[in-house]
Structures are given as C-alpha cells and as structure tokens.
Image (cartoon, rainbow, N blue to C red; front, top):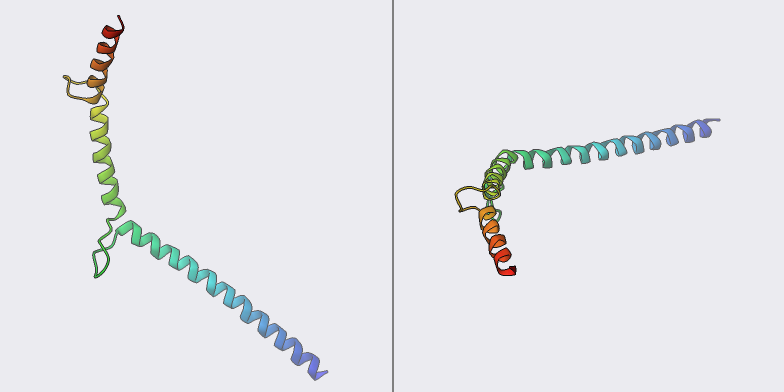
Length: 98
C-alpha cells in the first residue's frame, strides 16, 4: 500500500513540476516579448558595436514629414510640383499626337 502511495505522490510531484515549468517558460517568453516591444517603442541609444535605434515617436514624426513632402508634390501648385510636370508632359504629348 505504501509503495502505491509513494508512486502516486511521485507522479503528482513530477506533474506539478512540469506544469510549473511550462508556466515559467510561457511567462518568460511573454516578458521577453514585452521587453522587445518596450525597446522598439522607446528606442535604444547607441552602444559599442550597435547603432542607435529611434523610438516609435521619432519614426512617426519622420513618416509624417515624409508624407507631407509627398503630398505637396502630388497637388498642383504654381508649376513646381510633380503633378504640374505630369500635366505639362500630357499637354505636350497631346500636341505631338495632333
């Protein structure tokens, strides 16, 4: 009777250790992903062997400035935008086709 109880206690202990190990492993992965997210969000300063990485706010600011430059070129103004240049090219092509 004692050997059966011992084997059951041993099986329960091994199972508990396995479950705890899996929980620790999953928690560790989740924490690592969260730390990577924070590194991407806040950016990283330069360190020996690695260049600095800007954070999300800097990247969004850069993207907004680039989009405004592109948007400026896509609207007709006094003849200096890409849109105006395309319109001039189309006029010339129409004249050449006639």
